[in-house]
Length: 383
Image (tube, rainbow, N blue to C red):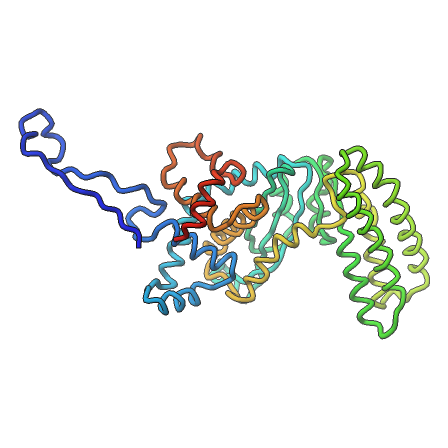
C-alpha cells in the first residue's frame, strides 16, 4: 500500500502579520496524479492496462483475481479509469501520427473488431482496427486506429502528408487510397503469396506445383536473411540484393507464367498463381530500398496481440472504449518496438503526464526520449 502523509500546520503568531488572506491552516499540495482525487496509483493503472492489453485479461477476470487477494476493484471502476486516462493521453495520438510519417517506410494492416453501441448499427456488425507501423528506423512506431468500416478512405486520410513506401497485403482498398498519389510507392507482400501456396499444398494429398513455389520463395528468404547478417552499408546491400535475389525472383516469375496457362484456374494452386502474378509488380518493389523487407510481417506481428486479445474479451463495450483501447495498444506495442518494458513505460508515462508543465514538455514522453533508467527501477519496484 502506498501512503502519502501531508501534515497540516497552523501558526498562532501569523495572525495580524499581514497574510490574513491566506488560510490559517496550511497543508502541502497533494502529489500530482493522472486521475486527481482517485485512490488509484500510476502503478496499479499500468498493472491493470498491461493485464488487459498485453496479457489479454478482460476486466471481469481481473475483478475476480483482485477478489481472491482481498482487493475489491470492480470491472466498472477499471473501465472508467481506462477511459479517463485515455482522455488525458489523447494528445499522444496526434504526436504519433506526425512522427510515424517521418520514416521511409509505412506498413499497414487491419482486422475486425466487434463494438457495441455504435450509432445506427447492430451490435453484431463488424468494425475494424487499422494498424500502421513505421517511423524512423531507430525510433519505430505502431499506431492502432478504430473505425466502423474497412473503407479505403480511412487509409487515404491516415496517409495524408506522407511521402515514401507503403507496404501492405493485397487488399484492394490500399490501391484505391493511393490512386493519383505520386508521393507514395505501393509495395506488396511476398509472405501473403507464399501463404496461399502453403494452403494449396496442404489441400493436395501429394507433392505438386504448390510445394515447388514454396521452395523457390524459401530460397529468396534465405538469401535475404544472409545479406541482413553481413552488416553491409546501404548501397552494398542493395547491390548484393540485386545480384543474388533478383535472379531468384525472375526464376519464380517465369515459373508462374508457365503454370498460369497449365493449371486449372479454380484450383487452390491456380488461385495462388493468379494472386501472385496480380501482385507481382508491387512484390518486387522491395528490392529498391534497404529499409524494405520482402513482406508485411512486421505489421502482422504488431497486430497479433490485438487478435489474440480479441479471443478473450470478444468485443469492445462502446466506441469510446474501442478508441481508448487503440491508444493503449499503440503505446504498448511502440514500447516493445523500442525495447522498453511496457509496464514500466506506462507507469513512467502516467507519472510524467500528471506533472506535465506545458506543451513543450510533451516530446519527452515519447518512448525513445524517456528515462530508461527510471523505467527500469519502476519495473523492478512494481506497483
